[in-house]
Length: 412
Image (tube, rainbow, N blue to C red; front, top):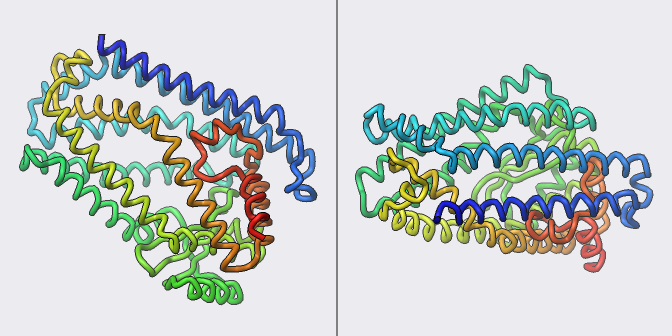
């Protein structure tokens, strides 16, 4: 009975997500051929049609990919495959930590292998067709091998550390694991820009002295110390554009995609970076970390209580039940439980983006450059200009671009 109820709830959520996708698709078909006033002179009917086709193709492919993964997940959890897999791991009669490492690493590899055909189609079919992909098959293979090796090492480290804490502190492991995850996350924020990111991209010092001077002057104005400013060779893999900050505290490392620098003037780039600085100045990242870590602490304690009850294997009819299979089931149940909270988190994120836009406008006194930057970002990335409002509520971390532009104009 419990199993049927859980399955029905999961299928309801999945169908609701597909309904949101359908609404978004219909909205794009209805309005996607209309050039908005904010984009007059920046796009023509041909580009708008290309934008519409790109987003429709991505939505259709996303539906197929999601449906396939849903079927695999249902068969794995509800069709007896998890029971067989758990029984096999138990039959190996290995030590607790080694058993857990094998259990979760094989699942990681299985998920990666299942995703490969979809990733290939997305990169070499869809992104290629619309001129975004610049990656060769050889580079894709190299990146995939590197990603798998890094995932294996990091995931293996996390698994072994977590299981060690569970073994050594049966009654308080939920707290120690939470502490470990917090420390590990902060550690990764520090080392990722220096160890992991250079494995995939080349970072060269900015060769535009006027732009670098403008960036340092802007950051000094808002109280951010800039260690280095880099241009990243994103064009080796994609034509999409972006920029980001790394670093914890007041000292930041700024990275600009070379594709972004090719398409924006200095004032537009400074407006984008002022927006990113706004996130730091308004302590959005710190607030997000506090919120997520507070929720994580509660989740870890609730997970501890549920796992101690030893009922999940019974609900899912896992005969050769192990602690690891219960962790998998619990993770699945947590994704279901988290679904109703998704609009709240997305709303908070969109509110932060609006505050960062306001900060960029106020600090530079130049809303026009931010607007033109948003227009170029949307145009060059073939972004959907007409997302359905309900779809945006559940999925958009940034306000839709037309809404952002209208709000920035009101600032002036």
